[in-house]
Length: 351
Image 1 (spheres, one colour):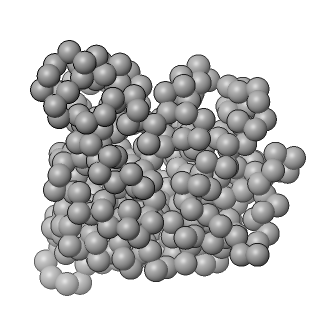
Image 2 (cartoon, helix red, strand yellow):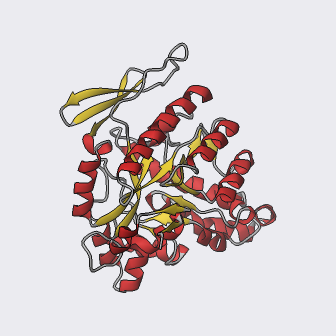
């Protein structure tokens, strides 16, 4: 289990200034190491200074994203957390760092470095940060090695994974041994969109990947956990989906009706999809109160977690204000603000 220092108990209570747990924030190291183990792998990234407060993440000679210093400076994060009424941030790598598309050995090296940067941030701010590391899921053995290492590092609650692994659904049986071990170790699993499907169908600027393709891919990832019966095979697995589960809420009624109509689906899916979905967690990042209320009806009041996608430009800037606008009951607001996240992350405090 992940322990927070005792003073954190005073952050959680809506009468205080900082009371939320934000499960969905990202870290990018200020600098990335040179690769010294042989020829430079395809897609090995670098960071290039843009100005005093920004650096550009470069992959294959292409500027992927210009990032502000809140991605790596804890003091900047802490300032913003106060403005957002966030007591604890959960730190996870920017998804482009997952490196599933790279050869597994150098990907494992890059991810170990990134995870160690997160560990340093946590060690210096143990009351305010919790970690979700990343693992090279293109190689299950290497992924398990890094998972075991992470779960021994103080402050890490689990891992962040992509919504697909080089196009493969996370519900694919080949990933079952990894999820089995995650459940055994008590690791939380947070699923974030990465290199989504359907980009060729979008008409418009590249930012539509984040706006439209990300939630589509997350929805398909969540559905794959239902159609594969992953949640029935691993009833104690704590798995959450970013962006409110994406398109999951719209796909679910059709899936249930198909389960009733088609015998092949009924034979394959072992439990009503509406019952299975209540075993998932979803973050609150939907930018809309009616949508947030609809998600709560689907998964239940114990399964929604506050999430923002901080510190990128396209993030929820007032997550608790959004929750307060959606729900009148203070006990329910508290569940979404911090109680559910503490359960998902298995946070405890020393007496």
